[in-house]
Structures are given as structure tokens and as C-alpha cells.
Amino acid sequence: MKKITLFLIFSLSTFLSFSQYIEGKVVDANTNKPIEGVNVYMEGINRGAVTNEKGNYYLKFPYVIVKNDVIRFSHIAYKELEVPYVPQKKNYSVNLLIDLNKLEEVKISERRNLKQRISYTKLSSMKNGVHSFGSILIDDKIYVIGGDASVVEDIYENS
Image (cartoon, rainbow, N blue to C red):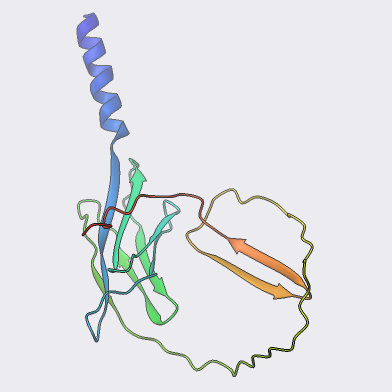
């Protein structure tokens, strides 16, 4: 009886410790070239990844039952794409269409007097990290928003 109980506990614990993942490649729809820096994000599990220089990504998440979720692909120069998540499917390779917007003129001046130091105040920590971050300088203050503290080894490094 002891052996059967131990076997069932061990079997159940290894089953629940498995992780799920999705992977794929993101390419330009017109040139078929890989796109680096595409944000791949699943809102339902609050996890994301970014494509490498070959357009590959790998998003691992703990074993959870995810039935109805959407995988969002976004990049500053491309139209955002949302793809429904299917639990049995592991590879989500997509093509993104260019979405160029004309930006306002930017003036660069080399004679601007910059301060040597900018004071800051830490406001608060985020409960859940995000897969991107942004910052802006307003009235001699730097505001940083977001950031993902998770690090995943790049499995495509040698491919």
C-alpha cells in the first residue's frame, strides 16, 4: 500500500511540474526576412518573450490550464497581430505587415547644457513584470515604466 501511494504521489507531482511552451518564427510578410525585437505576449498568463536576430522566440510558462487566450505579436514598425492560442499547438510562426507612420521632425542640438546628475525618487515596485519597458525625460526627471525581470536562456543561440 505504501509503495502504491508513493508511486501515485510521485507520478502526480511530476505530471504537474511539466511546463508548457510555445515557439515560432516571426518574419516580414513582404520580404520573408526574420524580424528581431518582436514582442510576443500572452495576456491570460501575463508572460511574454522577444524574438532574437533570427526572428525566433520561445515562451515557456508553468503548467496551467489555458483554454481561451490570445498570443499578441507587436513591433513598432509592424501592424499588431493577434492569434488565438490552441493548447495542443506548440509552433506559432507568423508574418507581420509593415505599418509605417510619419513621425514629427526631430531637432538635434549639440550645444545643449546637460546636467551631470538627475535626482530620482523610487515610486514603487510592480507586482507583475511586463515584457517591455519605456522611459521618458520630462522636466529634468526620468520616468521608467515597465520591465521584465525574467530571463530565459535563448535556445536558438546556436541555430
